[in-house]
Every structure is written in structure tokens, then in C-alpha cells.
Amino acid sequence: MRKWISVSSLLLLSLTANAFASQLSIPSEFEFLAVDGYPINSSLLNRKSSIKLAKGEHKVAMRFNDLYEDDITGSHGYIKSHPFIVSIFVDGLNQYQLAGLGSQFNDDPDKYAKNPKITIRRVDNGKVVYSVKNTQFNEGSLLGEMLGGEARKDVKAYAVQQTTVHKVQASTQAITNEDTAANAAQDETTVDNEAMLKYWWNKADTESRQNFLIWLQTQNKK
Image (cartoon, rainbow, N blue to C red; front, side, top):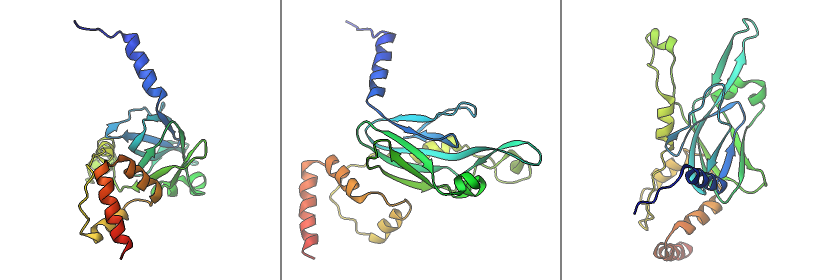
């Protein structure tokens, strides 16, 4: 026998899922582009100021995108930064707030857009585990394309690609190329190492934990 689920039941399930999710909020000067491989669609006049994030690891693409007015001509335009990727570990039900860092954020948004710096805090002042990776993606412009410059690129498609989370199974194989690992680590801002260790320890199975403890003992003897 088929069981039909009413629209009201689906709505209730959706509301229940959102009730068990954390929230990341951004000020009006920023714009969400994608999260975990999915585009975030919003209009210029009605941008999303927050998104829901379930417990676990997430990658969020966003950019600085602020409206300005030319003092001489009175015309309006947008100051846009290259997209940047925020990798964040969500633990429990929390309210996360993103903010711009530095005096240039308010005093010189044009310079700020060239190297945007942000911070993320929890409303309850709890520890936040996150990292930020800047990109050099250039959308180009219609004028530049007409003048023979680089063709315009889809920033949403790029953001989706950059935020796709690849699930990698735990492995006990040692990393033999330490230089490669070190170079990869330099691509992102340093995160809380202790919190990261706890996160992966909780994700690992019993066998992986035992192998890690054996490896740790050999390191202590060196």
C-alpha cells in the first residue's frame, strides 16, 4: 500500500530540520555565492543575510559586494572583491556572525575589496573553528570583453566548484611527501589544531584510533 505524505507534513519536516540547524549571518556589505557545492541565489535588492548550516563541516563561498556613490557624478555602482572560501565546522545549535576586519572595511572599501579580511564569532562567545581561503577569480566585464579583454566568467559556477565537499575515507597510510603537505597547509589560514584533532578523532572508527595511538607512541620515542 502506498503512503501519501501531505504538503503540510513536508512543511513540518522542513521546519523541524531547520530547527536543528545553526545559522551563519553576514552584514549587507557581503554576498553569499554558494555553500557545499550548491549556488545561493539572491537578487541585488534582496540578498540573503543568513543561511542554515547543519552540524558538521561546510564550505561557504562569498565576497565583499558593497554599493557606492560617486561624489562627482552621483552615479552608483558596486565594489566587488574576488570570492573567498570559508571552511567552518559547525558544532551543535549556534548563531554565527561574520564581520569585516580592519579600518579599510569602513574607511576605504575599494582597498578593502582587494584583500578582504573577516572574522566569525558565535553569539554565545563559544570557540569557532574556521579557515579562510582567498581566490584570484576574475569575472571580467562587458566593457573589457568588448575591448578584446578576457571573456566574462560565471562566478556562481566557480563558487559551486570551490565549495564542493569531497568526502575522504580515513587512512592509516603515512604521508611520505612532507613538503607537499606543508605547501598545501599554507593555502589556508591556520585553524584551531586542537579542535581539528578532536573532530577527526570523533569521526574515526576504532581501528583507525588504535593505529593512530600506535603511531603516536612511536613519535614520542623519537
